[in-house]
Structure formats: structure tokens, C-alpha cells
View 1 (tube, rainbow, N blue to C red):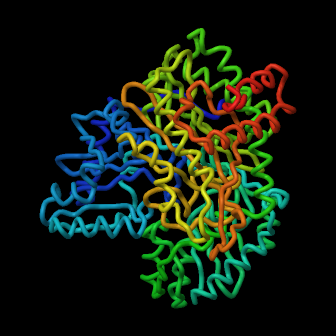
View 2 (cartoon, helix red, strand yellow):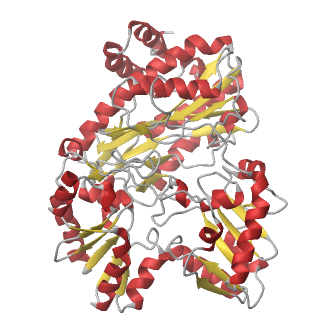
View 3 (spheres, rainbow, N blue to C red):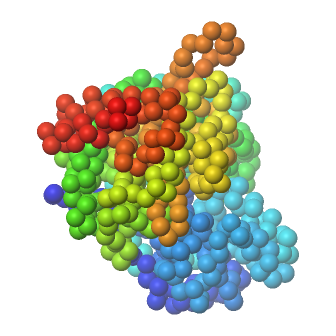
Length: 611
């Protein structure tokens, strides 16, 4: 393999530095007459992945997880994480200096109410908190008799002496052969939505939305091809895009200038204030836009229309070109994944492979397609008990041998220009136990229930979520994550607004791509997850139906481990679905893989019904 890996296995946390860095921050807070400060794991764009220059939480505490926040008061500090990261946080930070608080037990707001002194002043960076998030903090401060105040600049930056430079990745045009719709037509659709909502302008703070609307991609963050950019789109005139000019070639600048005024990011605040001075009604998504954005508009005299960004819903529904690209990307990715699974079946029984070996091998198989741009997220490669950690990330410190007699879970994805992929397979190394087979099969039953679902137009993900859980519920089991998330088109592997979960309130519309990934996790022993991506399509014609019906087309192509199936737990319909899926996998992939993989596929996709 040539070129740098897309995934690092280093643990960049610095436990010994937690105390001195917290002390330095407290000194800076005292200088500013602040009694505390909130440090979220966020950048100005609320990105899932943030550039190194924005990793304030990691630098300050040593915690390297992808979600969390810290509150530092003059006499105590706490790091708030969800269940994915409780163990990791305790290993990475100095817990004598910062307490690890699971948010399932105590929210940051509840902690503030209990720990802030009356009359105290808590600071926050208005560029790193959404309007909704700021309101929750303000309510907690009021309950404690304290005051929340916006900092003029971030005090963490004042003490972070070796802070990396901001990213400056090149912006590229996303070709029409992948995008399927001209940017000028997308912008016209957006203006039409603004007119219907009687809004004068839309402020776009989500770089994913900017990327989609202007048909651009970038290289400013890991694993998602984003340019860190914002935009203002008036309903009656041309838009303005705010992006670092150093990222633009002459050709890209010329293309953008055909669509919009192109300004430097430093001019964004002035653009917001201009909307305010003109007393415009500005549509702003309070769940994603920084609190500072709304403050700049309203302080200058404008009015905020708090509503979801219309681009999110448009972006989620893929057009025919994007759908065709997704099918092509999954065919290519399925071949790479099957080559990997065939290799794993040959090599793993010897007991010499490690979790890192598996990650590197899978990336190599994907690179050999010649089309891989990045992995879509750090690969979860969990052997034995590590597989039970839902968002486990292997490091050189935690790297574990893939041992016979255990389960191995690998959750991975790829970024190709024609589509984004995400797949999880759980495989038995050697002979699985009866318990493993029984629980795997219950997860499979839930997966098949989603894949076979037929549902009326307007159905939400929350209404389908229990389909995946019912076979586990029957024996008192469950899993503590959503069943599925939306997926972008050469964008984020985690895309809203639709999801299949208990909280999935958005309707599932034809053209949306989501994951189907039920699981089961036995702490300290093993994890099971089966994940395919599915496309919402027109459902079957049913006589007498009073509503249009939708269904799912499975996009992902790779075998599901037959050795882990307790066949007596499957009903005939479930067996028929699996055999048909495996026949499709075999027919699609066998002609495009090497002979050794094709032979493995023949066995791996053999019909259950014939055994």
C-alpha cells in the first residue's frame, strides 16, 4: 500500500497534562472575572468531525471521543459523556482533576444547578453553542441564581500555546455526473421554500448544506469531504458564500462566482449584521446554527424565524443520479468487502491477526478499487469483548488479537465520489456458542424485519424502530442505540433529518438512504451488529390500499455469516429473504472479484433452504 492511512491508531490523549491545562484555564478565567466556562466538543459549524485546531475539549482534558463537553469551575470540573465513552474517558483523563459524569445519570444543566454558586458568572463561547444549547445553559444558570455570559473570545484559545493552524483544504467542484442537479437549480428551489415560509433570507451555517447547495466538496475535516464555509441566501437576490479564498483555484472561484458573491469568512459577521440593519426576517435552524449568528442579526434589528434548514430535507432525498451512484458505489464496495471477508476467513482461524491488521487490510482492499477518497468514519474493529463497546476505536494500546472461539465485529465505510457506504458484519472465528448463534439470529430477524417493511407514506423512523427490536424483546434483550441513521451522497455518513430510532420523528421519503443496523452487546464478552444501507422506494401495489406504500431496497452487498444463524429461529419468510439476498450478492459480485473470492462467495451465500 502507498500513501498515508486514513485512520490513525495512536491515542493522542495526554493524561498528565490535564491538571496543568485546567489550572491555566482557571487562571485565565479569573483574569476575565469568570467563575466558570463551558467547553463543548464542537466547532462553529457543529460538525461531527472537527479539525485539530478546534479540538479544545481534547487538548484541555485529554478525552479524544467524538462527543462530550466539559464544565470548569474555580473549584471543580466535570466531563460529560454518553455511554459510548464512559470507560474511555476514565482511562484518558486525570480523574483527580476532572470528574467523569455520564449524561444518562446527570446532564450538564443539572450539574450546573447543583454546583454553581448563587451570583456566579458562567462563560460560554457563543460560536460553539447552538441557540437551543445556549437556552438550556441559561435556564440552568438562572435556577442556580447565576448568570450566563458570552465570552468575547474563547479563553481556552488564550492558553493553548501550540494550537494547530486552521485547515486549508482545497475546494473542488462536485461534478454534475455525481450531483445530478445544477447548483443554480438547487438555489432556485431553496428560494422557493423561503418564499413559501415568508422569510427574507436563509443563513446556512452547516457546511454539508453549503456543499450540497453549491455542488462543492472540500478537505477541511477527516472522513467527510467538507469545505468549512457558510452562506446567506436571500429569497429575492443572489446568494453570498463565505469561504477562504486560499482554498479556491481560479476555475473553482469562477464557477462559484457564476452562482454567488464570494467573500472571505471574516466578512460573515458583517453580512449577518447587514441583514439585521435591513430588518430582514431571517430563517435560522436553532438546532445547528451558532448562538452568535442569531445574536448578530437580532442585535442589529433583524428578526429570526426559528425553523429547520430546508436544505437538510432536500439533501436527504437523493435524485436519480445520486441513487444510481449509490448503487454503483455499493457494488464496488461490496466487492472490496467480500475480498476482505474471504481473506479474514482464511487468516483469522490461525489466531495471528489483530484488530489493527483487519482495519488495514480492509482499507487496502478498498484502495485497490482506485476510487476510494477516504473512509467514511474510523473503522470499528472489535474482537471479543471489544465488540461489545458500541463505538470502540482500536488504538495501539487497546489492539487485541482476533482469537478463535470469539466473535469479531467490523463496522466500516468508504467515501467515493458517487456514494458513501457504511456496513457492519459480525463473524464467528472458529465455532460459535449456541448463545452467540441464538442472539445473532435474533438480531438478524430484526434486520430482516426492517428490510422487508412495507409502510404508508408519511411513516416515521420511530414507527419502524420496534420492528428491529421485537425479536430481542421477546427474550428480554435490547440494544442502546438507534436502528438506523440517514446517509449522505459523498457527504456525511450520519445525515439528518431522517433516522430509524425511538426519537426518529421525520417521515421516511422515497429517495432517502438510511442504515439498518440492529445489534446486541454482552458486556465483557462480545458484540453483534448487522448493518446494510437501504433506500426508500415505492412499495408494492396492494389492492384496496388507501395510501401510497413505501418499502426499502437494500443497497449493501456482502454475505452475512451463515455459521452464526440458528436456522430453527427463522420463519420461512425470513429464510426466503436471506436466501434471495445472498443470491443477489453472489450474482452481483462473483463476476467482479478474483477467483479465490468468488469460490468463497459460492459457499458463503449458499441457500439456507438447501442445508
